Image (cartoon, rainbow, N blue to C red; front, side, top):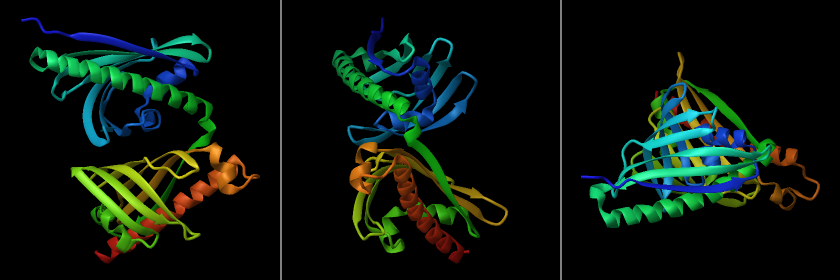
Length: 313
């Protein structure tokens, strides 16, 4: 019996150097920045050119996760990928990214797929054809926008971290951050919270947060939990001064207790600086303002987590 393996290709051109685009796709920590559905990616295994990664992303607004194997070839600017376990009606799915330089600051991005349907079902294959075509077109369009932006706005993206030493257990500190549904009772700056976790370890968190000036902001994030050492998140409803906000909480055991940290990665939205901070405000002003606002909330949350964990000793 011959199996029907479908091979398709999509492509798009981007105004960014080929090496830059290759690096953004090769380094999976960039994915929440360049692929809108991606929440978080972790390396499961990592060799010199071969790796296993686990991807958490939204599909039709629902958080999902899966594992893929990748082979990286920086010499030819090619990345091959293969899903480890496919979801019906897909029996198998793989492909490649190929980045071709067109000039010093422009490239062609080619996305190849090969796949087959469970039991070679024609209806299943038609469903996959449509899904791959639709997803590839939207993924490439978003990728072009985001790699061009990442290349042009490299200086607008920055990361920072706040840490606190806690004389308590990592589990108690982790539980405090994980149990965000209790934050309205536990944290003065949180007015209300809606937390859902339909898939264990994948959370949707919506909350209303009070700023220092008394205004209330509604935010929505997806969170991926790794008991009891890490919680990663991507904020999808963003304040006016940001086009990207991702981060993670980490809990590292020490001789005296635990180091709890809150890390943020932000890309500034320059279009809104004047409206939010005034006509004379600079990028440096916006950077300081955003960092102060996020650090203030992180340090407040870490302080309450510390009190909670130390009281439970």
